[in-house]
Length: 193
Image 1 (cartoon, rainbow, N blue to C red):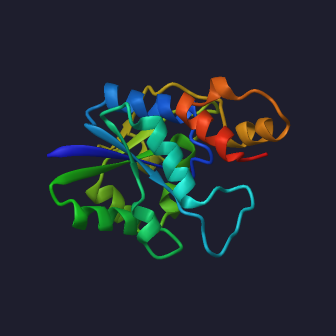
Image 2: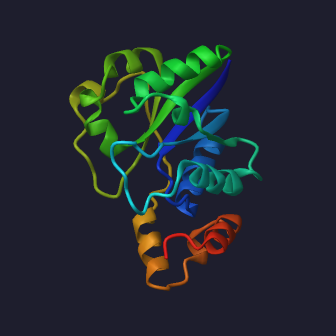
């Protein structure tokens, strides 16, 4: 059964840190593909600097089209709000019964994983791949040495979408932080200015 890792994010914008992490997981774990699940804009919370869903999908598509193992996913665009990972996983399982889905998360999310809706069910049915963070986190004992939780040696990326948006707004050159086609689209569309 093909193993697909799900990497969730607003990707506002999708930057080289995201690309490096996704590619590393595709090349250095037993995951066959990484799906980049673009988190939709909540209809209840309008963020003025959050690009519309289709634009963020386009950024991820452009960044990953040359990578066979990386795919953008708009699955959450079609699901009721607010989005819960457990519902997204159930939807994907129903629509792709021949695939096995795993979650990708940072250590900071693992610390609070017990607060997620239906977290026990998620852990029972899915593997979790954990990416390290710069600041060492105190992982709850129940998640230490858990057979479904896999720590990865993914590079720690200290690049943030917020930093990139702020740099664009103040007229700084962000080209080195973005895949070329992503930069072209942002520049052409005049985003974040």
